[in-house]
Length: 237
Image 1 (cartoon, helix red, strand yellow):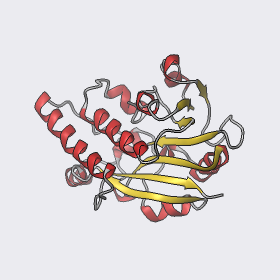
Image 2 (image 1 turned 90 degrees about the vertical axis):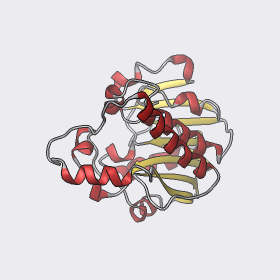
Image 3 (image 1 turned 120 degrees about the vertical axis):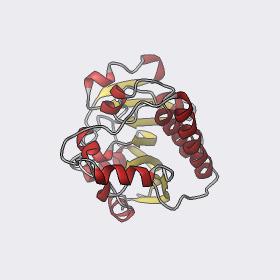
């Protein structure tokens, strides 16, 4: 499961709580729109999330990093391309769903990327995404991942002006306070990932906590706040 190409190189164990929990969240979000024909996964990284997306349609994968794309197994998707999210190499109205999980924060011109997503979506097609929340939490972790920004709901609503927003909510409420404390007290100037090795019991506990959040989201029960913002949107033009 790709969270971020740089991060996945550090978190290589598929049993890591974060990788498994993010997979559950993606499944919960896709279950809200059901099965469709063609899905474009932008910023696909090494392709771990495609295993989930395949349950909902035929997957096409793009990423700007050729070193990531080469690791995506050909059997998982219909096609994979090295491609910039601000210049998607597909015709207008090509896809029923576009997914973007922890991608927009990497893109300098995120508005251009959203315009491209809108262009390649079919009328009434869906955009499903996640982004990191709260610019005040921008830290050395974000710099290590080469993030340009974190997001608030107001900024996302402006960015998604050509979409009908069906869901816009938070995930990872449970780890917000410890993450906030850690990022406020640590050196914020030196790029460094926050990832740390965990024992089996701690890993399992954190996974089950986040899994419970995804179950709530699947049941349309919103969380009050969280480290991640998710969205389910429909093309309105």
